[in-house]
Length: 34
Image (cartoon, rainbow, N blue to C red; front, side, top):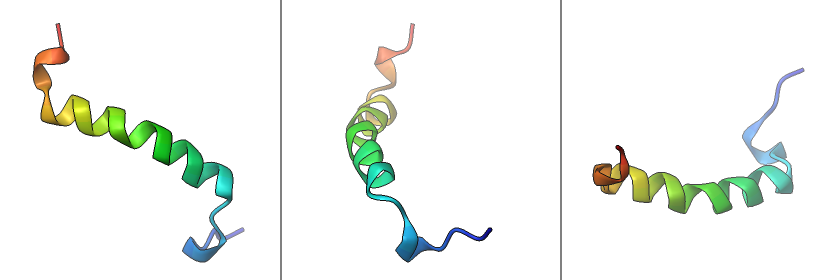
């Protein structure tokens, strides 16, 4: 079963939208790491 880009479930887009800001914050601010 091949998953094409146009057939990405809305849930995945929403999840990515919620996680993206945190990933960017961690990448831009390595000081968060202990």
